[in-house]
Image (cartoon, rainbow, N blue to C red; front, side, top):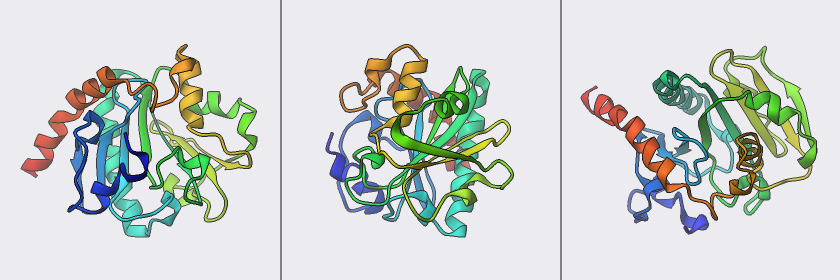
Length: 217
């Protein structure tokens, strides 16, 4: 996996993409592409990537945020029958090569179904020097993203609970580490070392009908 060019094909249609499972499109809209997440710790883990360069989603404009919310909601609603809560999160970096960006210098939103409360698990942790603020009173969550400083943004589908964390001590793939610990597979947090191909295949199979529905619309 080449992290520095991983999403180049999304931003430039003339660029070749790898044959990796995690580079197979789930959905494409005017401004975004959805793909399965490399290193999926659970089936259904999906990324939504902007089709123009940006380091974090606070750099989206109003039209992009509206479209992103629509595609994220569509994927999340498709995952609901799994009987788990659906969470959205972003590691918002500000500089190329930042640990907060997890080795991918392009904004992307994570959508993940989980059998536990990710917000409670994340906000209970003390590493990474994250200072949390509750933004649940502001709708939609994408409008709460800070325009300065690195951050972690986290919200739930069910009740739109939204927590924004200001990052003072960047840690690579921090939310992945939290999820891996809660699932009892803490050593497998790193998507580079554990690509989790079986779960990527499950994600593609789960969400493949969305491609057919989108094509018919």
